[in-house]
Every structure is written in C-alpha cells, then in structure tokens.
Length: 374
Image (cartoon, rainbow, N blue to C red):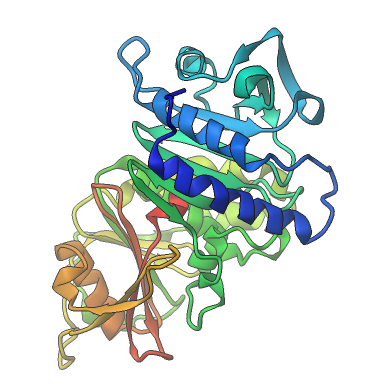
C-alpha cells in the first residue's frame, strides 16, 4: 500500500462505512456477517486502486474483492497460507478470478489485511469492491439474501468519489428501469419488463458500439408518425424470442437467465446497427436500424431535465444539444412526440441515458445511469 492512501479513497471510506452501518441497522440479516471498520474499508479501496494500475502479462487486472471473513463464506477456496492484502498479489491473482461471480475473499489480518482465498457465494450485506478498469472501482452490496442482484453504492474513478443517491427511486416519474437498477426490490417484486430491460441495457453498454432502444406501448401504431419510411429492417412478424422465453421462465426465476441471456445479447446486438431498435412493452422486436424523425406538426424539443443518481448532483435543465449527439437528440425528440414511449441510449464512451416523458415536470427527462450499470 502507498504510505498515504490516495485522497479519493480517504473521502470514500467513511461514506461506505456509514452506508453499511445504516444497512445493518435496518434489521438483522439472515446470515449475519461482521461489519468491516472504516480503516479496513480504506485499506481495501487503496490497495484495489493501486492494483488496478498494474499490468499482469500486459493486461490490466479485473478483480472482485468480497469483504468477508473466511468462516462466513460458502463455496470457498481457502489458501493454506493467506496472502498479504497488497497490490502485487491481487494483480497476480486476477486471471484466476476475472470471471463473473468469482470473488477474492479479504478480511482483517496482520499488517492491515489478508487475502484468504476465493468464493462464489457472497452473503447478503457483504460489501464487494470491483476493479472494473485502471483507476475505476465500484463498491456494491447485495441487500437481500435471496437476490442475485447487487446495488452499486459508490463509484470511484481517479480522484472522483461518487456516492449513489438512494432517494432517486422515490422521485415522481422515476422510470421503473432506473428504480430497478438500484436493486431495492427483491426479484419477486421487480416489474418484469424492467427486469429484462436492465439486462438489455447492460448488454447494449457492453458491445461498445453505441445504440438506441425505443420501448413502445404494445399494439399502438402511433410511433409510425415519428420514423422515416420505408423501414429497411421492419420485422414481419415481430420477433417474439424475448416474450416467449420470458413467459416460459417466469415459473422458474432461479434459472431464468440461463435461458434468456443469449436472446438478450442478440436483441442488444441489433441496437449496434445505425438507427434505433423498436421494442414493444411485451418484448416483441418490431424493427431495427430505424431513423427517428420529428412528428409532423409537433415542435422541436427545447428543454430536457437531466438527472444523475449521484449525491450532490441534482436535476438541471439543459438544451437538448447539451445532452449528447444525434442519437440522444433524436431519442429525446421521439419521447417528446410519443409520450407513452421511453428510450434507452448507449454511447460508445460508456455513458447510458434513459429518456422518458414526465407529466410532473411537463418535460422530457434524461436519467444518466451508467454508474448503476458498472
């Protein structure tokens, strides 16, 4: 570890500790785990940051660190001699644990901490620190012991520590996909459409080409007034692969993503084609590569209320050209003209924006949610 932890970690550690303390205070978890102290959280953040800047065989490490003692982790691989919690050992171990769902177990020990092994089962209320890219860390936690979904609580990028604003899902007109990304509900209570849309958003961001997904009311043809015709890639009949699999897997949610992950990737791949992909609320793919245009007789969108789920970054009005490029502008205009629709827009640089119409604000809203997708 560096002699003096880097400033962003020093600023982030007490905030993470306060969040976890409040989470523990809500009630006793079903599988009790000890609360790590602030000094240990700082140590993990600092070591993870310096490990992220290393190279192992020319590659930047991607690591997930679970802050849990070995006796509280199931399905664990345990070292006969624990390793010191330091940047070099973490970088060397990264190739063994870079697959999703595998975490290095770290806990208190001599000289500030130890790496005791790895685990594929992290109990609820355990903090996880993920090294996503050089200088980019995400701290997350699984609030519900029966949920597979984690809630991001902090994004640390370089010298910028961004704590997630947990009040965002309580705001009027907050899109369901945004509230679902916070992971506050258990899987049984998630709105099914948002469940699939979260997976589509993650997959759209992952392909790195940028894209737009327009979600339309089922059975409504009003959208045709806001697209350029003829449609080069209109589907007849609509592609129902997501709807069929969603219906088939609802009785068995534990196995759901075993069956729908590949179709989700296939649909997300369509969004990489220039133009927008049109999806109904029933998950029917209607068309892709669609050129969006302003609805005849409707004014151009002139204001957008932009928000980001980060503490201290309140909603602000912006002109549409300030929000993004042509893809963002056309999506905002479409939602302005088709107010029962929403739009999910991924940028090539990793930004992700959800557009919808707010009756409360009488305006198009743009929710920047990439911090929730890391």
